[in-house]
Amino acid sequence: MLDFHSHILPEIDDGAQSVEESVVMLKMLKEQGVKTIALTSHYIAMDESPDAFLQRREQAYEILKAELEKEADEMPKLLLGAEVYYYPNICKMDELSKLTLSDTGLLLLEMPMAPWGEYTIKEITDLVNSTNIQVVIAHIERAIKYQKKDTIQRLIDNGVLMQVNASFFITKSTRRKALKMLKNDQIHFIGSDCHNVKYRPPKIDEALSIIENKFSKEFVNEFIANQNSYLVK
Ligand SMILES: [Fe+2]
Image (tube, rainbow, N blue to C red):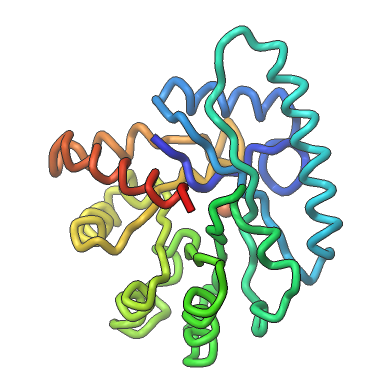
């Protein structure tokens, strides 16, 4: 299993506030059967340059790696990425491809919680169609209510991928919608979007067991295999 969205790297954003907390979250995910974790710290272009962010991310990763060397058990595989906040004309950012996940070409893009205009939709689909970048929209469930009815499907039809948080399945009031979207192939990745141990811990296993109960073990396995297939460029 893969966790496509996490804030585990220590002291880089509003996620783990110490390397000890990072390790606890990694262990929780390992216990849940997660084999690969995307480390997707927040990147906001207004706050810093991509290179400054990448430097900070490298430092945080080195600290985590050093801490993990003390662990006897094998840990899940870690992929370095970012959750990049969208702004108009982001496609003109020269370093955008440096913010993709490891060597997959996948870019986790956090969109505004507001209606997206045609310009925005075109910019996202142009990115997918005319660059090597494959856009994955972060926790799409948060933005759906602001969009026109057909926007999500239009984006998917144009090659844009969708990520949802495990909580979309776990929360009773949104579960039906989550399962329906999954059945309709509108969800490509599930992420924990974990930030800490106490208030936003990783719960990938809970989401998967809800999916398994509704559909089947085979359905879950197929979804997991499909997720993994995107990691190979
Ligand atoms: Fe996030």
